[in-house]
Length: 258
Image 1 (cartoon, helix red, strand yellow):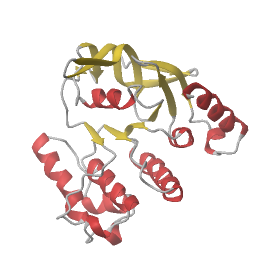
Image 2 (cartoon, one colour):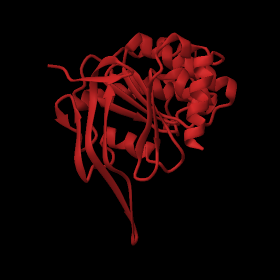
Image 3 (cartoon, one colour):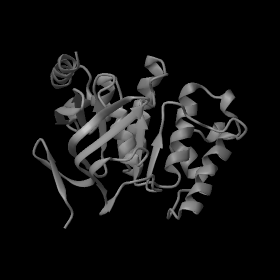
């Protein structure tokens, strides 16, 4: 039986199940514990956005989901297996696009297929289909230094998605973009999700972005972190940034974070 989670009375299948998870870092003589006794379910096939003040543990949580930092206690379950190290089904995009500067856009995206073959990932997309989906067909022969910031991020997303991962983790992917380009990238990400239905978990500091892009917004706070608010935002009322529902939620989150 598939486990379900409930957010605002909506039942969804579970991708990740975290139970009493603790993550600690030691630097020199100092040990920091951003996550302790932390539990949450992450829904399958939806976009979950993580909000919260700097240092509250958002990126640590994202890295724990990807197996990039180990849990010192508790469990992170993904499809019946425990996440203890990176796996092919979960891919992470950091703030820096990390494209190979000596490869063209097409070659960078195709590099993801090389990873797919090594990792045993099944049914990757074709490079041409991925370039079309991310609107980079006309730029396939360009190198990263010839691209705008938004195009580089699109190429990074294409390289990640070409192997058809079950989960895409994004750590503030649009933070370096100007406001207009950021909004276009937000809509593009939702369009890509509509085509692939890939489970996505995105860390952002931008409240408007979280509500517009996410089907669910989780607000984190305190240290060790705790969930201050967990709300479904897939309702059409949240598609309009000027609606009363949108503005009310935005003000509520601003007050929490401040």
